[in-house]
Image (cartoon, rainbow, N blue to C red; front, side, top):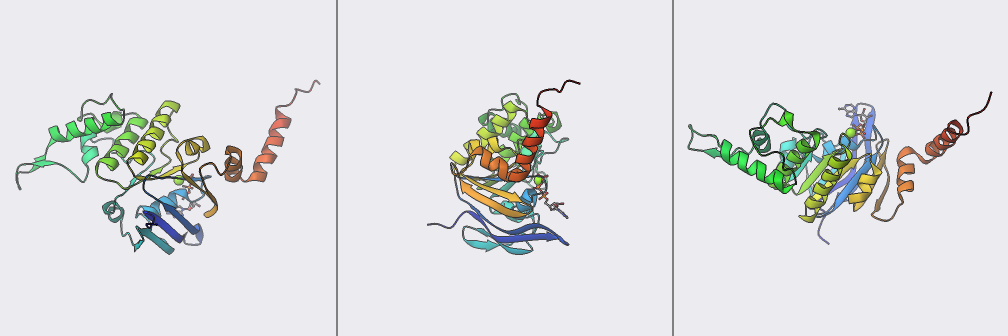
Length: 266
Ligand SMILES: Nc1ncnc2c1ncn2[C@@H]1O[C@H](COP(=O)(O)OP(=O)(O)OP(=O)(O)O)[C@@H](O)[C@H]1O
Ligand SMILES: [Mg+2]
């Protein structure tokens, strides 16, 4: 068995006395989607930040292909092919779509000191890569990123990660601000990346979205891994209950049944 592409081994992260992550072990392999589920404050974003080099773990290790790594910055993670797309796409509203696509990888023409950003090539590549992902309304690389819809911006960030050779694509709540149609689109992008052998870590509150694309699942509660399982091993109800804390959900249902019961006559 080859070592997992990305692995967390007993990772703990504390902020002062606040224990955001406690003893988390996870792994993800090429061509696999790992869904990270959990309620607000469960530690999902913190975990993503450890994986992407924003935070260093307080204890435990991050391993890439079996080797322990220490990321001093997101750039270090990026160099190993770990690309993270944050909720609003990590794009820059005042930059053109093409600039945004090529931030850090600008194609240049001419020789130093006369090098300049090759707008035409950048624009053509950006539009082409977006079209591959089904975004056909962006036909001009000079358009401002801020004028794109949430889903289009999300697609731009995913397209650039894939184009620049991401091996691990981490998406923190990519569908939470999106409509039904755009969410479906992001789910399609995830499946597209998976088919290309990319390992995807997909953070979401939405059990339906997770079940649609996930191969493996982990549920975080108060910074701890409450459960992990593979596709088909749990029902939707079991996952929802676990996320909400089973008892709380049963209580709420009883309360709601009372409130929505027949209207009492005076
Ligand atoms: N930089 C920080 N400094 C101090 N505490 C932090 C920091 N980042 C996160 N925390 C704390 O860690 C805990 C987990 O936060 P985190 O953002 O990881 O949750 P989350 O699961 O992503 O929640 P949400 O679903 O709301 O995005 C919270 O209690 C939060 O207050
Ligand atoms: Mg979060």
